Length: 375
Ligand SMILES: [Zn+2]
Image 1 (tube, rainbow, N blue to C red):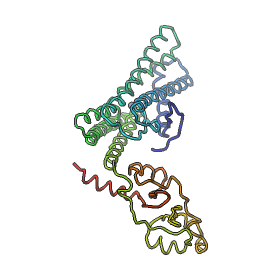
Image 2 (image 1 turned 90 degrees about the vertical axis):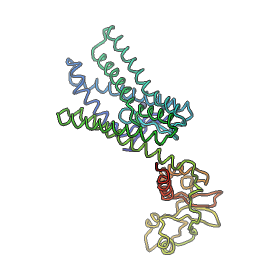
Image 3 (image 1 turned 135 degrees about the vertical axis):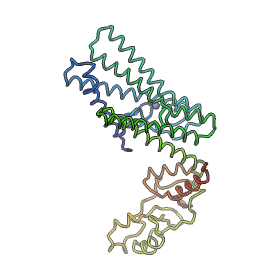
Image 4 (image 1 turned 135 degrees about the horizontal axis):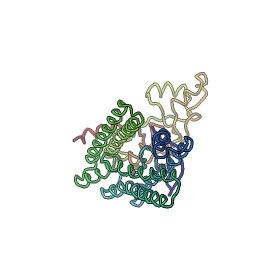
């Protein structure tokens, strides 16, 4: 579900579309062309209804984008950097670097989206009425009326108090305000999110059994999406809370096994990979860090050439991607690991290796900390 591509950049925020959105887009167009517009515009030929459906779907998409942007702009105004927006089903996900610092900020941010949807509903309602009195064609009125209904629905749907929907965020902000405990507030709000997801899925299944295929699929789809979102957001909070304030130097391994650059691969394999059973080693020459030699790179070289090739020749040269400073927060190091696609980062200071940080160090710390923090 993580595959997305970039569509556009607005206000400095890149907007991405998750591939799952195309399933939704298809479902929307199909529902409109075969279910909705045949009722509202029976005089319209088949092809015309598909065109109407496409136009309405694109305008709906723009409405959802406006909803997301109003969240993001409030976030930016409160000094919360937004990396980007990914559009999913009923709305999207804004990628925040950090969580809102106070319940008040979270409340304002969460309220901004539904406020925009209700505003758009009013605009489309006013347009429908005006265009009706001007005597514009019925197909235009139907599209505008559909957008009025949908924006109203999106506003109401998002106010349902299940995290991570906007209403769930409002609930979390209120719980957080009164309990002063973000983790507990998130847990309760996520629980409501899962309960609501369960109701949606159950209702969807019920629809399937009585033969309302499209309605059934809709509810199941949204329910599954919400359930997954409620789970991951809670885990992220727990992880963040456990790791906040921990710096790389607190948990890095200080005694690192390094290899000299002129070591040949046969010796590297016998004396290092077999003996220590790590999957990579830092290459150090004259006390200076040069790069990282991985088991993967060794395997790329034919065995009979191992006595001639050296570690320095096949190492990944030192780059910013591989290195962290000792003062970096572990939670940031973790996202750097994810970005680099590597489970190990070298901790260096002035080109000197002072330690190594592995993903296992972080998950172990997390396990221990979350056991201690259990309530
Ligand atoms: Zn929203």
